[in-house]
Length: 162
Image (cartoon, rainbow, N blue to C red; front, side, top):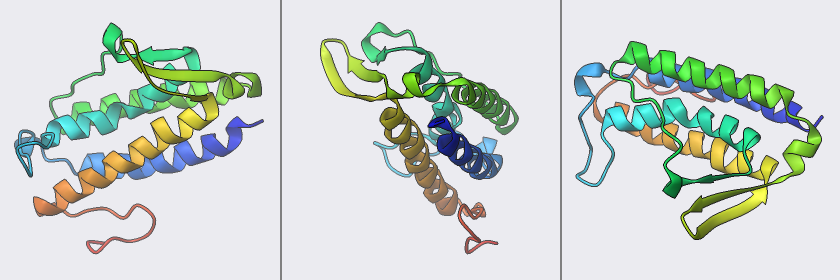
């Protein structure tokens, strides 16, 4: 089945992501490296809830931001951040494991009102909109932690702090 490679990848990336989220200091939740940047808490919350997009992508034909139906959790501590991530990841994993090839080949769209941002086969949307999106923002989170002198865990081998 087509989902097996993504299941393995999701499990691997989730373990790395959880290690990063474990290091997010609650006392720096409002810190931003720049005025136009997300706060640490907002970025960490976004990273923790990105697996929700996998579930949404697999169970719907589109996500339209203008409809306001997607409401990610907003954790307020490292402990609740990890709880949110664990729940988001487990649901995404279960949904992906149950996805058949026909579902993965189906088309999926990301929209904002009357504007279609993209339409891709669902498997490609999972790769770019979910997995690459997660890795991108986790990389940002590692920079935030580095700037705050929080030891950064290794993702694909040891980091300078390991």
